[in-house]
Amino acid sequence: MRKRLATPGPTEVPQRLLLAGAQEIIHHRSVEMEALVADINDALPRIFSTTQDVYTIVSSGTGSMEAAVANLFTRGEKVLVVSNGYFGERFLGIVRAYGLEAVVVSSRWGTSVDPAQVAAAYADHPDLRGVLVVHSETSTGALNDVKAIGRLFADTDVLVIVDAISGLVSHELKMDEWGLDVVLAASHKAFMLPPGLAFIAVSQRAWAKAETIDAQAYYWSFKRLRQFHPMPPSSPAVSLQLALHESLRMIESEGLEAIQKRQRVIGDSTMRALVAVGFRPFVEPPNERNYVVTAVTAPQGLDTSELLEVLSTRYGVTMTGGQGEFVGSLLRVGHVGSVDLLDIAAIIAAVELSLLQLNHSFTIGAASSALITAYHEENQ
Ligand SMILES: *Cc1c(COP(=O)(O)O)cnc(C)c1O
Image: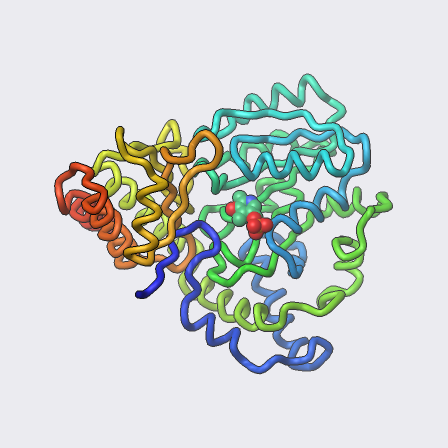
């Protein structure tokens, strides 16, 4: 049975990238590596819309989140954590582990955070040193307005740290123009690669702060990354970098705008397909959703845990549900990366087949028909 990943990370890796990663290993202190790294370091800042260097580290996404906290803040400093999902909570956990004082601005899971709430928190806490915010909240499907949040702190010395791990590439993000100080991304989301690399871009304002701090970090040290740049400070994940080189070529040849349009059309079409068989959009208002994942609440009487089980055992399709109180009611269809209409058509067909298997009552073909209609309309 062919396996299909409809998860928002890891994502499916196109064959072209698997093959690039299967090349012979090159030594990391070699002329070939220098050339590889030069191309990567040249392309990454364009993806982040920054003139700063972007550092590639061997880590899952979370390591880059921890590195940002470890290098930019010291014990007892006050930061604001914007939290409307699982990854916002993760930032909070890291901030607490490092002994920072956290002010939390939260909003209900499935909503995005109102930048006015962030402004109000800053008015109450003028001693804030940083703001940590997730761009695309993969756990709920919401998109936070990091452009507006960045603008709030443009003329301050408050550092804005953005987890764009699933949002970068999938959505517009302009690091320099929006005044973002640290932007984080990872290989296994829109870069279409296996997990294992994270990317960190650091603004001038953040460097000025980092210079003054005796960071409790060695492997995660920003200063060490900069000292060795353009080469990696310790053994890089060479195979992943070979694949990254190819992934950046794919991203640049399609173009960020074209990718973002594809993501939007796929996201909207997937939503219309699921709504046609009784699911409801989880994000409220629905236009504040992200296009990394389509998150929906199941119709009455349907347990998404059972649906996920049938999808995976009978059809080889992996999707995700919800966490905590949303286990059993939430369904998340990931479609970040290389996904196209026909991939989604297969996924939606598998959903219909699984609903039949579960004796759920619906009109056969309704989701597939809505998908094709929506896609056709949006591509006119
Ligand atoms: C995937 C993801 C992460 C990082 O998770 P890892 O498992 O550490 O790679 C962080 N934030 C968001 C929004 C994500 O989607």
